[in-house]
Image (cartoon, one colour):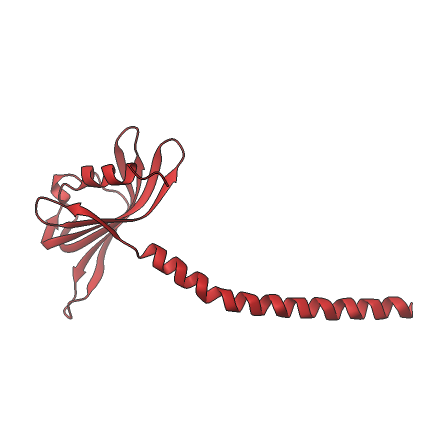
Length: 154
């Protein structure tokens, strides 16, 4: 009985040291992971402009099953734009699911930005549905985005 108590005590002490080591490792790695994830999400790749001069960019393109993709889309309007959702908006960002076989793009969430009095971009409207996504009323960027996203293979 005395031997099992000593063995349990040593095992408990080892487990405590192991937990401490894992905690230190997690604390050391966490900032690296956070910086990597933030950078990956923030790398906008410019893909072109609309006829009106709006800058179009994509980020975080993921290849899904059945020739589908998901991506973040950003449109920076050259001049504040009146859109079917309201306005004037200076920027639109959307999380979009693309079906490259049928040629459709369905935004799952959209954010519309305006400028506040100090000149910063602020979200002024969030939408979950958009019948006009990428068509002429929003700047006609749909074909440009579809082509770029669907041509990405990884």
